[in-house]
Image 1 (cartoon, one colour):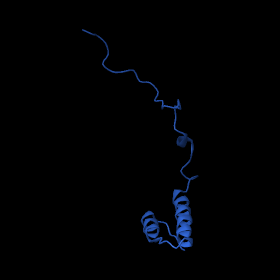
Image 2 (tube, one colour):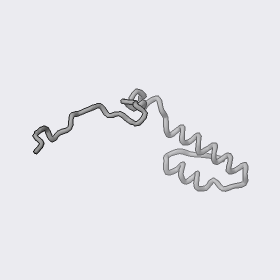
Image 3 (cartoon, helix red, strand yellow):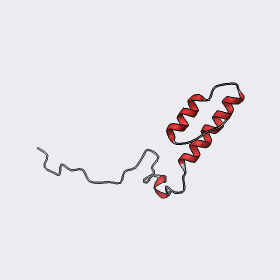
Image 4 (cartoon, one colour):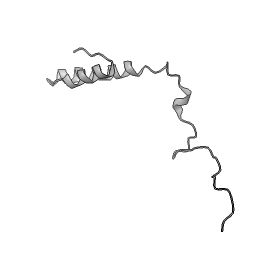
Length: 72
């Protein structure tokens, strides 16, 4: 019978690339405006669809759901 601790020792979490801490922990949330970034991407895609004669209705719906606006 094995006599010892049932708890494993605590060790630092390391991902497959050997990086101990996520990069995003060093970024302030105020630096990244995700809503503006997503709005720009949706607008770009809507313009591409409009230029190719395709509907951008689902992009408009997605933008509204995310709190963004797009105009073509």
